[in-house]
Length: 114
Image (cartoon, rainbow, N blue to C red; front, side):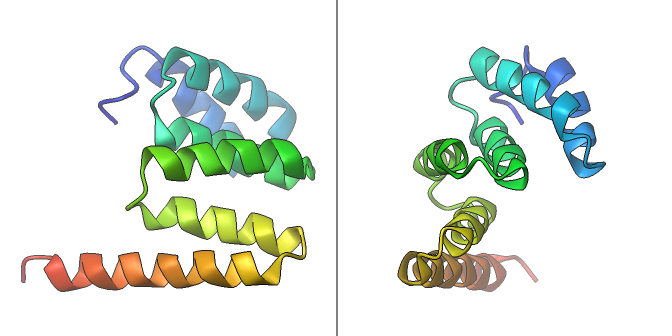
């Protein structure tokens, strides 16, 4: 995560809290990490995931769309955006994001050295 050097000490505990469903503790840390590393897709995605799990869909959408903008070839961002659109009942967009996720994963697998 070369785009996080200064925010890494905040990002890691925020990410751990998110994984352990301690959303109230995770979100402020992840938001601060995103402020410190505004070009970090990883930070934006984790912020979006926290908002998604909190049911704050407009905030999740902003963060996840920014993550995908920053890292358009990262399947994880497209997957999270697909989950968001599914929760928003926008099935057309959800399907498109899940399809993009699959395409990116297949491309990565086909270009991986054997």
